[in-house]
Length: 529
Ligand SMILES: Cc1cc2nc3c(=O)[nH]c(=O)nc-3n(C[C@H](O)[C@H](O)[C@H](O)COP(=O)(O)OP(=O)(O)OC[C@H]3O[C@@H](n4cnc5c(N)ncnc54)[C@H](O)[C@@H]3O)c2cc1C
Image 1 (tube, rainbow, N blue to C red):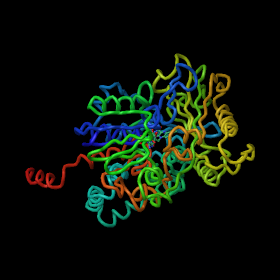
Image 2: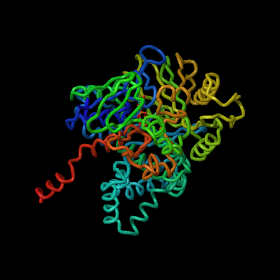
Image 3: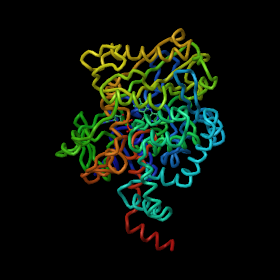
Image 4: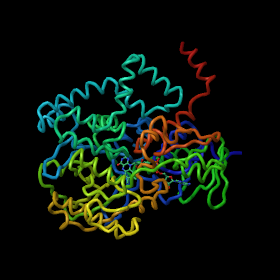
């Protein structure tokens, strides 16, 4: 007798969403999480000072709100206290000379903003929307479809029917363009390039990588249309609501349980318990853990899987809100990228990939208080800083300033690098250093320590280079979400459609497991006819 219909190993957003969708479909599910919190890269905690609620890892939820799991579960999660707040000022870029550019919430506002930097770029923006929106279902469909399945084939057929052979070939070719090539041909102004180039870092790519132009367009449109929603009270409200919903449906969620073995019939935990799964075991883990540790005899499969660049997070608790110099909108914008522009992002990515601390990193400055004042005591300030251009093994410093010792992420290296970022920020926020109450920094090593899926502090659980992306994620020899072992499934950022809070892989696996068998589908089709 099985203990559960499905056992889910790991409570990342994909594991929880998959479990919630299966529970909604009537399955008895059990989520096992090794950490002492649910949510994986979702965690809200007072890590600096009491009263300051920091999203320790991920913070921004446009992918969740625009994703398939939210569409199905949103109303139920709202019953469990999940409420989204949004903004009309989602993002902007600030350049070293103090100039800035913003991505806003309507086509007209964006066209006007881009024209401010170069007359004609507004028309280029409208042109992008005219070209992108009619086929947005295809562009977003790639990220919402199990590509190696009849649904993937149906998406391809839809593209062929609509666009014809030539059109479909052109459309697919355009998906592969780099952000640099797209931006430099689409917009005249370097301010426009610098506004969108940093966003490709949030997809695990660099601006010269294949397909980064497609990802930049997807994000630009998604941010214009969807803004930058975050949950009232902290990102953890999402994980809390998912767990509450799963339990309400009769499921079980437990922390502090490390799963060390998996088979088609169930799991074995580190404390020696065996739990049986009647229908599926769903692993929210990396390929290296899945094939190297959890499954028997398949170590060879993920040997070539590569992790991407490393990440650092800096959290500030401030005695007053940051007072930015320059455009007053900077203080009201959810995410400001401090960047020299497209070439600056490209250089910092290249330096990180060559093992160097970048001389002039892209600094992602998140300001959750611009949307949700409940995250800090009245009148205070709070910043969420992300640095996505770091090496795991540090060979040197491109600025020639910092000693890197043996190349590991020591406390000393972490704090000195954070000092450099803080000093750069202080040039644009004159009251920053005088208002710091506390600062907490997480190095790549700290991120890995906090979540086994963040190997090397890679926030995206695996390089998204083309050979590990889309049709080939997680592994060219095992793309999609099935594994070679019957009834064992693979979800999470390492799998298609990759990282982010969209819960795409969790939703795709739940949909496949809940799909009626072929016979029933055919009968239903005849009945409809
Ligand atoms: C610092 C940071 C900032 C980010 N910012 C954003 C953002 O703002 N917006 C956004 O959309 N995305 C963001 N991302 C990306 C996004 O958060 C992740 O891609 C996503 O949350 C990953 O979800 P996941 O389902 O892969 O699981 P994870 O969040 O990686 O969680 C997996 C869970 O499984 C558990 N686990 C693993 N192995 C076992 C085992 N053997 N037994 C039991 N439990 C196990 C782990 O402990 C972990 O809790 C960020 C990521 C990071 C790291």
